[in-house]
Length: 122
Image (cartoon, rainbow, N blue to C red):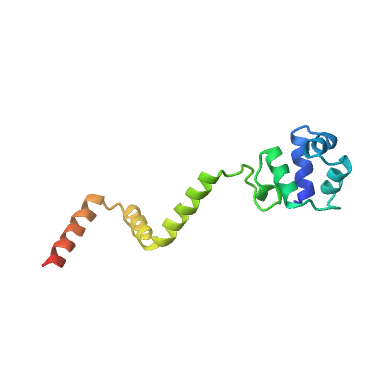
């Protein structure tokens, strides 16, 4: 869907008239109509304000994702840190997945690791 189609859909879902949205954004009704019909593209600041008004993410508003809810900064930072952790430890996570998939108990793994450490220290 295009930006204009998504804007129109959001406006209708929320029972907001073009003139009311225009008033909130300090635009004309015609400007909103032009956005909805894709005759004009809004500035980034306008896109941001529209996303905030409808409480959706900018990515959703631009048609990049189906996820409507904007992610707050803390959640976004946490997600980035988690992705980095997973990326940096792919081999370890792969090993853990194998252990779980094969029903091996962690106690057994711990004993084996202790055994390997004791052999290394000698």
